[in-house]
Length: 132
Image 1 (cartoon, rainbow, N blue to C red):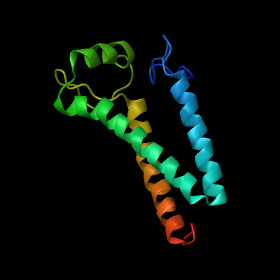
Image 2: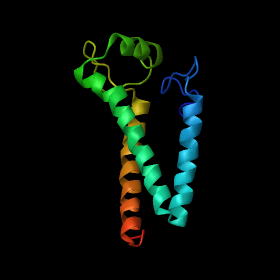
Image 3: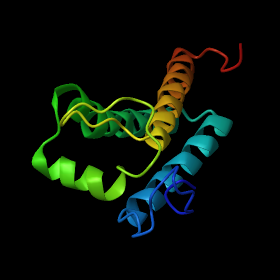
């Protein structure tokens, strides 16, 4: 929703988000995850968990590495065009550009998703009940 509906200043998609295909693909992955979890398909749950891990890794590389070590000139331009006018909870210092609040929340949700999906995958591979 955050990539398709303007909630400015929470997000800034006034010029579009440029990743419609990726958003649709992630939606399909989420649906596959729900179906795999409901049917207890351990391979499906595992594959979806790995996609979530990759997505979280992309978030870390995209937002947290530039915040920690300083952003490249290219990321500074991207950040200025897409995130500089959105809500940000963390301080900015020089080229250390913080993730915007919407991505911060997304990343927290992704951590919870990776954790729970990973735990379900482990339980399914062990043959344990998914419910505890």
